[in-house]
Length: 80
Image (cartoon, rainbow, N blue to C red; front, side, top):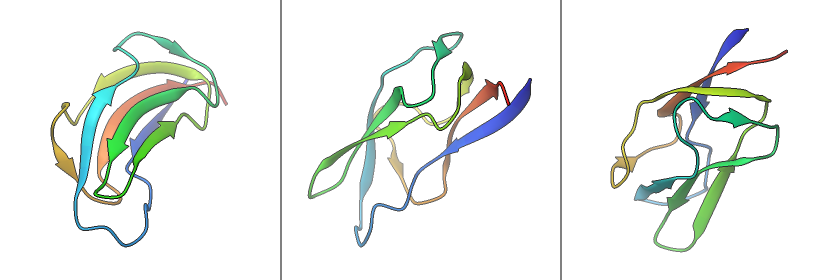
């Protein structure tokens, strides 16, 4: 397995992005396209999907935290 860093995507021109909730727990098996985390801006809510299948290994950013583009949200072990 290979490590993959799940990062905050580019959500356009927004000043504040909040990580509202994790939709998966550490140790959960994840399929490509599964929603992992929900981010909210002043304009809308955005689910972040997993680009790979694997296992959520570690949560870096906790719920309720403010994040910016490129921040590492969590770490996955992925199947390539």
